[in-house]
Length: 104
Image 1 (cartoon, rainbow, N blue to C red):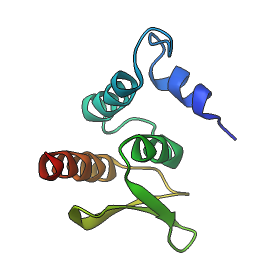
Image 2: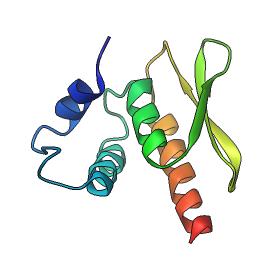
Image 3: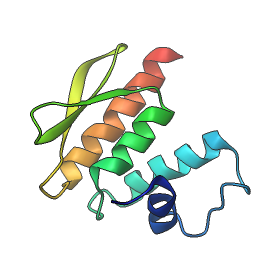
């Protein structure tokens, strides 16, 4: 099982939690999603980011994690066991962007 700290180190090796604020950290993670949507992402990466943006998530049928936010009408499903593809990452980024846009 990969811990939160290991995930941050794996994808953001040059960033220390003490060097930057919490909002900077999840902005960096979202930028990592944007710059490498086809990367080796796992559902835990999305769960961490979702919790930082107050996006709710739940495991649907044991095969996917669904991400929702009250201000956005659509949800995003990320596969738990299969490889997360770029289309999933882009849909998640779109959910965060729409949520930010509507909440302003």
